[in-house]
Image (cartoon, rainbow, N blue to C red; front, side, top):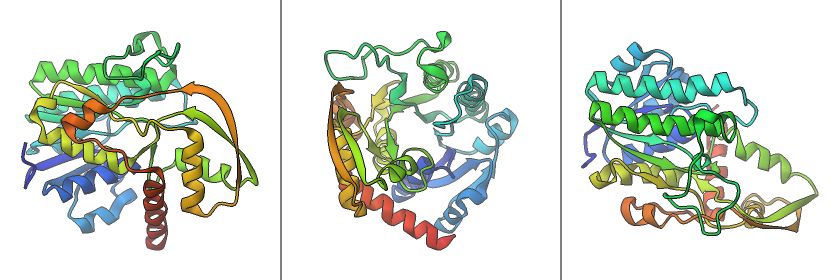
Length: 304
């Protein structure tokens, strides 16, 4: 699909990842409609040409009206909180919210979508001998495997494809992991507090942190490749260690923390080669991505 002048609805456009997705779409020539509960959370996007429409994931009628006239939708809004592990909250936002979004897309006549899933849909344990790929086994969300967030996101991705088939929507799903970026309220604040300590244990454990801008670029890449419809792509981060992520953080932030390597085994190895080949996914080096994050956060603080 050529995105020039296409109208793209983005749910959760005011959130951390949502802002990156919106800007990547704008850079590709699309017009963007942010479908959000509170436009004031990212009012600066209006100055960049974004049209906001208020709609809650619980309100199917409002979502339907918000999607009318759109060529594409990015199903990005979800509940992701390191502190909220209540099943009911996660189920309502992630599973029921996805149901409302896709039923609304069908009613509004939208026939192309990208669904933001997560690396968390995989069965993490026992760790596979090979790196995780798109074909690796996933959780059984109905049995609440993996906890509230991961289970409801597995249900969400499965439902997105089920309802896409029902309504004739060409959907691509992306499975990122460990997203970091400006305006983050989960990963970045936690690491920032950690790196203020004088001594920090740095696990030599593989975990795929990914820069939010790379996920946003993958959204654009998926839309540009019509053959990506009906597929899920592993868009996790670099196949690297937590230790190296912390070392990059130290270099980019000027932290004086003493990093003490902590051997912990293999961790989570990932193979993102399919996404690289088919939708142009790429991984920004940690230090570069973190520097962009810190610079953007500083700019946001000046605007506040």
